[in-house]
Length: 247
Image (cartoon, rainbow, N blue to C red; front, side, top):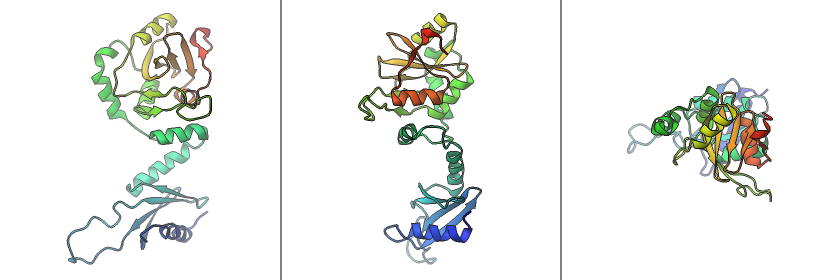
């Protein structure tokens, strides 16, 4: 367990690595640790033109209360950093390291919320989506992962060597014919959540949160939920045909 004095010493060591040197470190405590904010000493009042707040633009750090491990964060309010750190810790182990790396690079983080973008997207494509019910599981997937482009590992192990997936809301249009045909064939209504470069094909989710890939040659079962589907899509794992009804 790291005490406040120990955390301050760690934070000052981290601050000493900055160039140019930053002299002041402010420490804010929360449940899981401490947020360290860097700041230049405030200029005397009335000395020169107005300047931005002393902490503007400097990175932050979190010192973990249990381990003392330091992680660097962008220049955000310390309360927001504490919240995101808690979300990240809670999500630890949710995805395997290789998949988590791809997600982080794509711009995902625990607690990501794109509700406003999803609602705008639904209004924009209301005509195309008419008659398709968006179940809570599909909406949750769109809110958390919407707008992300996820490259796939190729057979040679190179990231980007396979077929990328794009999760709605995206800049392109929405194709729903395959989703309607799938719902009729399998008596299982689905909702579009993205697309994939292979084909190209559509990614859809049903009321249980199961994800399917609707390719022109065949329909495939991707995963029992959005998390397992993302793992398979990024790794390029083999997919079972939806016709096998192994889902």
